[in-house]
Each structure stands twice: as structure tokens, then as C-alpha cells.
Length: 211
Image (cartoon, rainbow, N blue to C red; front, side):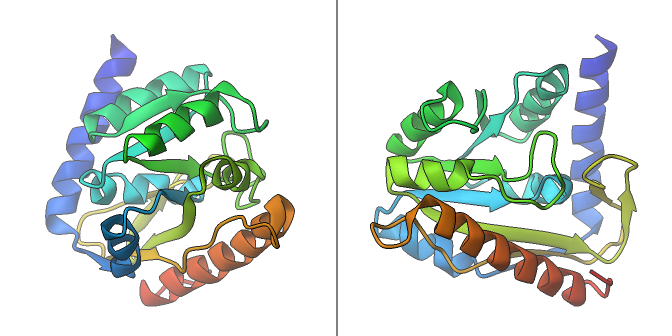
């Protein structure tokens, strides 16, 4: 009960903070264009910036991949507070239940969402799971980055950023890419990692932070 109370309290707090901390979305037209064309989409984000994005993605029909750990139970409850769908499992193998669940979500028209360095890191190191998902589903991978001028950094492996009141927040949607016959899973992973690092630096610069 106490853990659920913590989740709902955090959700309420994040909604309050959002009301006094404006967030600018940059690059959303890339996602909108793909959706209007009926193209499948998957969001790629770093674990440490996921809390910054929660409220801002609550209206985008996202289904997130969440680990089956005890921490994953809390993450699932928090995601549900913000209207996300969830799939429990791993993205470590192409045939995993987690990836199969995301393929089904994409087939329903939802946006698959993966923290590419989760659930245990190393931080900001892109695992191959999302590229495998793109190969299986044909989804375009859209890299995301977020930063804020006033955030609390938690002492966790991913240095999770929590927005504070009156923070100026930025949510960036990068150039989409996907696995093709020419690129392959590993080349796509490397390309995505480079794009996500560049996008994270850009978000930090906009927020007036050193990356």
C-alpha cells in the first residue's frame, strides 16, 4: 500500500509541477507527419530523462516496455497514472515476450516506447533492443531527449532528472531512422546512439545546462 501511495503522490506532484513549469516541444512535426501517413513509430529515450517526459507524452498513445523487476512494478503503476500502456518483459532478444508485446502494440496503432539504456544501464548506452524492434515491426525510431533549467538529480545509476517548479523544460524529437536491408540492426543502433547523444546535448544547451 505504501509503495502505491508513493506512486500516486509522485504522479500528483509531477502534474502540479507541470502546471508551473512550461515545456517546449521541438520536432513534434516529425512524429505527426509519420502518424498521419500511417507509419509505425517507436520512441527511444534515455532512462535518466524519462521522468521529465512522463506528463508531456501522456497524450500520445504510448505503450512502454517495463522490466519484470520489483522496480518495474512501481514504474508500471506510475506509467498507468499518466495514461501509458505497458508491456512487461525484456528487449534483450529478438524473440522476447517484451518485443513481441510491443510489436502487437504497434499493430494497434500505438507508439512503442523504450528506455534504450534500461533497466540497469550503463547509462546512455543504447542496447540493440529497439533496433531489433524496428526490424521486426518496420517502425521508425524517433530519438527523444529532455532537459530542464531546474531539476533534481537523483543518486541513481541513471542520474534521473526530476523537474522542479518554475523550470524551463525542453522535449526534443529527433530525426527518425529505421532498420533497412542496407543498414542492419547494429549499424542502426550505432547511428541511433550518436543521434541521441547529440540531441541530449542540444536539449541541455537550450535549458542552459552543461551536458
